[in-house]
Length: 349
Image (cartoon, rainbow, N blue to C red; front, side, top):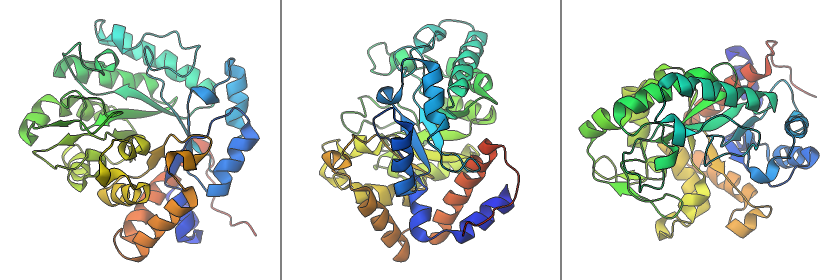
């Protein structure tokens, strides 16, 4: 896989590299249209929302089978299938966190085994489904979605969820470094907490650490701030990315939560989507996630302009080329592994 990734990387232009770090959403259930959208921008992935999901699982499987032009390097196809209150697939009958938090940990393994089997059967390879946040507060907006109301409970159930998904879909832990400690909904602003690093390590980090040890391939960064560590949102924080890599030992894919949430937070310093994208990649994210409407301009996003702006930041040295290459290589290895193909890279043309 490494040789394939290195050879393919060597053949890519900077624009192609940057585009491959984007996972975008486009509404609709027409596979050809979604494939054209992904190909025209050179995307690395698509996130499927409710408006992409047909009523029948078989129809979704047909859609996902048709969106990747190169079966040897399939798109990452992500979805938010937590179960319970956050579900995109209507056929998911497994329990969600609202029930699992009060059941033995083995129930979490069973639920996520069932859930990931359903997703894999529908052709989805990446689940944004494991909420590693912890909160005992029933009034928190995220309470019904957390697997643990305390640290120990969170550790057990997050590891159990990853174990249940293993070998079926890629597992994602969210919302790093932990939404439970930061009051407020990041869909409506940038929540913050004054919790310090040592308290975070003891109280908030363990479920993420447990999920990483269990084999989670992806960590999603939240748009929330631990001001004692870095006043910036964690999604834009080099410090938090370094903590994830060095202190928690994570070597997988770091992806942002929906970047439109940050852009639409109402804070003027995050109103520029190109600047946000540059800052997120410079901070250490491997991939940027955007849940776009049918007309991206309606959300203030120009996809080619954003790709061009990121590339310009690389040319200027603001983002080291080596950083982009490492990100692209990591995703190439992951996508190639998903394909099941083992042959060398063969250039076209």
